[in-house]
Length: 151
Image (cartoon, rainbow, N blue to C red; front, side):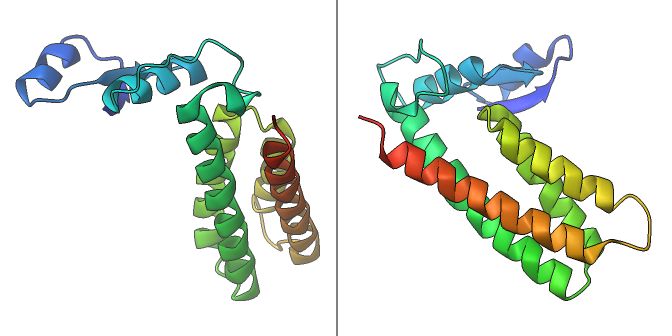
C-alpha cells in the first residue's frame, strides 16, 4: 500500500513497480481501513463507525497501536520539552495530530493543536505546554480505558 497525492497516471506507475494498493490523498478512515484489510487479506470489511473499534479486527489493532504509539509520543515530547528541543517537539506533535484526526480523537487533536499554537513564536510557554502534554496523556489513557471496556 502506498499513499500519494492524486496524480494522474500514478495508478499505472504503481502497478508497474508492483505496488498492490494505491490510496490517493486525501482519503477517509474507512478507505484506509478497507485498503489495509485488503492488503492483509482480511476478509472482514469495516462498515461501521471508526469510533467502535471492536466491530472490525483491523480497526481494533490499529486503534490499539494508535493509543500505544501516541502515549510513547507524548513521553518523547515531554523529554523534548525538558531538553528545550522545540524543533523535535513540534515535529512529533505534527505526526500526533494527524493520527488523532484519522481516529476521530477530537479532544486529543485539539489538545495537540493548542500545544502547537504555543510553539508558534518565542518565548514559548513551557508551563502551558507541559500542562497540555499531561492532558494529552490523560486523554490517551482515557481512550485506552474506553477501548478495553468495549464488549
